[in-house]
Amino acid sequence: MAVEPKESPSVGVDEWVARSGERREYLPGWRGDVQRAFERVGWWPKLAAATAIGVLIPVIGLNSFQFQVGIDALLLAILALGLNVSVGWAGLLDLGYIAFYGFGAYGYALLSSNQLNPPAGIHWPAYFSIPLVMIGAGILGLLVGLPSRRLIGDYLAIVTLFFGEAFVEFTNNVAPSKLGGPNGIFALDPIHGAHHQITTLQGYFYLLLILLVLSIVVLHMLDTGRTGRAWRAVREDPLAASAMTVPVNRVKLLAFAIGAMIAAMAGTVFAAQQSSVFPTDFDTPYLILIYAALILGGAGSMSGAVLGGLLLSIVLDGFLRSPTQSGYIFYGVILVTLLLKLRPWSRLAFVVGGTIVFGFVMHAIVGAIWPSATAGITGANNTWIDLHWAIVPANPVVFGNICFVALLCMVVVLVQVHHRARTFLLIPTLYLAACAWEARLSQVPAITRLLLLGAILIVVMAWRPSGLLGARRVEIV
Image (cartoon, rainbow, N blue to C red; front, side, top):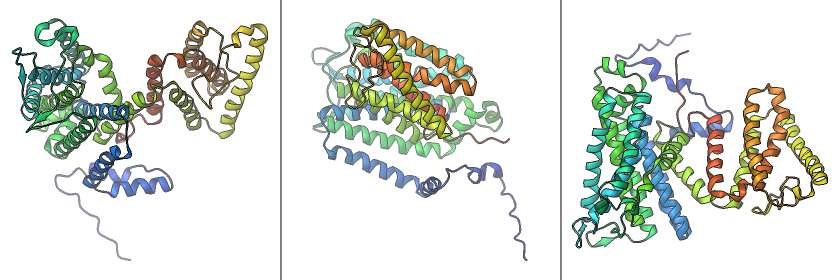
């Protein structure tokens, strides 16, 4: 039998890296077949299909609140996409990224209102003001990125965090006659130019969709070219990249500048759509949300950054604002976690059944000793989730707070104990979670939505540490 000659290595090609696709792990059964079929579809057809879905979404008939949620989701997706350049591709921990978003918003506000040169003001058309603001943000990104030439990791994070906090203090306290101070800037012009202007939520939705697609296209070209390879080389090992003649400092500065320009672009549309800007719009909590979106989707993946931004904003603003839907998500996250983590199925049945029996027993004992402790209403915010066996007093605030603290302590204990003991401790822990939710958490949606968001992130990270669409690291063992 003839033996096929072994192919010789190609000149200038790392064979181990070139054949990394052969070592990729796929899901078993039909899921792996679907995964392989999806990978065979080209990048451009995937983008076209995703864009078509986005264009058709308003056709189904959205109300004003749903359009606003969609606008917020697209803004967060664009911001996560820009943050992915410096954090996901170049490996630079930029904690001042939110300031570029604010720079774009305030830049547009000053160029599209009566704030400068009153009473006439400056009212430039969008095709002048937005590119100018983006260029200014790029220059600012270069300046902020200068410390990255010598600082890395935590040290760079501290410096950039100072820049982000300094921006908020600057807009609050410096030149209040021009920047508005804590009162912000009002009566901004909508996006306008060439005798047209955008005044509807649907118009801003489509504008953000166009900007998102254009940003993806530009970043894809950079990512697949020499610039993208240089960013990833600097992220993995700056010293090795420098030895391979990669201009490390210029590559870092370019990542800061491009990320800043994308954030500023999103800021201009945000300011125009809201018709006002305030310093509190660009504080640390929103920066945490942008990072959460990137981590959820998968740092280093453009599609992951976009998906993370869309999902996080839709879940946070579209579902977790409603106590009823929050309850569905709360119990749903618990159920999904149990389904994913508890094996064999007999263990799952033991925990679920034990929790229900434990709940009825505790409810009967506490009700007999202290009748007012079970006089509260359970399932008040849900139509089909009504846990009659949960302990809810008539005045549940203090009891709910105690349950919540006890729940946190039980979670810490669960992490430390042996596998078998953990199975038994899960029963009182789940019951405490139900009591804490029914007595307290469901009554304060502003706090609960953040707690639920954290729980969702923990579950996703435990299931897939690289994020929903992030690629797992491939290393030589």
